[in-house]
Length: 212
Image 1 (tube, rainbow, N blue to C red):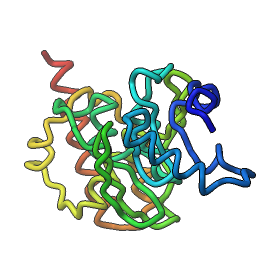
Image 2: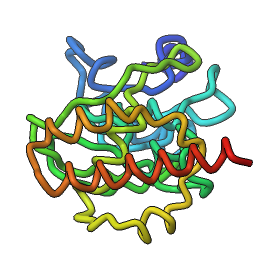
Image 3: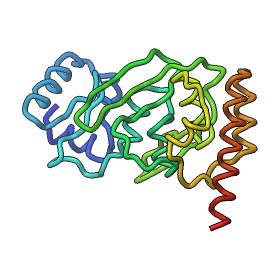
């Protein structure tokens, strides 16, 4: 396949999955060789085996890093600190795109960002929503699930001092009823206790804002 023909097929795709483009091809080995040559020539950027981006001069649409996170490992959804940043709950910018997955944990360094995948058992794979930007759909934890995932996966012993150190902001975006409902679904008494500490902290923060 000539590159201009490949470009016609791939230019409208945010991410190029060569397994899809080569499906049914008799000369699939030759196609793999061409892909390798285009990578070496700087026309394609490899994110992982079989997953590529067109290089900037050939790319027709901007690519969402959140969308890439879901493509690199499926099923997965953005959670923990990156989701807290997305929802405006923490002031810091987070460089690593952390996702939760039922598959094995993994860290991937790509030309478009660093992606970390944390394993969670299937019974806890919920609490996320579908979002779309630029026609690219990805999955994001709700504020409440992102907080609980953080406490649970990082084995954090939440205390009032820890919550102060988190410097949570925009706490009105945390649904307290949903937080407690989600915490109960974990079936962990310690996590429910931590959720109640967070509930108390959020209520105090909201009261403090009203008193200003």
